Image 1 (cartoon, helix red, strand yellow):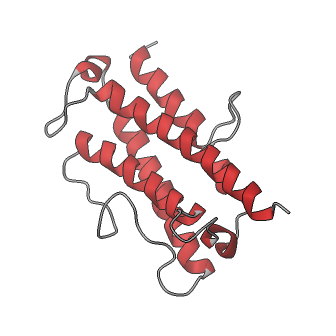
Image 2 (cartoon, rainbow, N blue to C red):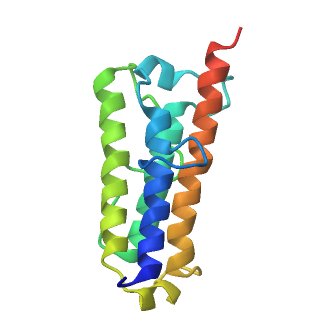
Length: 159
């Protein structure tokens, strides 16, 4: 196997985002079938909703991607947390943000696939963290927020 370290990182990204995994919820699966109204629901006024968690996850995929490919830019203004929805709750706006998440995942995965194992121990410009740990962090981040989304879905329908 060529570049086994890179292959492990790709597997981690996949099983955190869109490939079935033994650990339970994955990010894309936790978002499947959620309506814009469900995505906008908050357990209380100062808490994040599913929609905000989804775009936050997209931003952190971008953050790792930007460390690997400096020329990449996030399609929204701001950083980390983005108030959602903006304006009216709508299907097109929800789908557009899900497309941003999907695109950031595909772009990050492609950037990781282009690496060599020797690159994994390097620290990218503007970072204090090795490439290997940045990519693993992105995968763990997806799993963490997938669990939060599952909890929010249950809270929303609790009696």
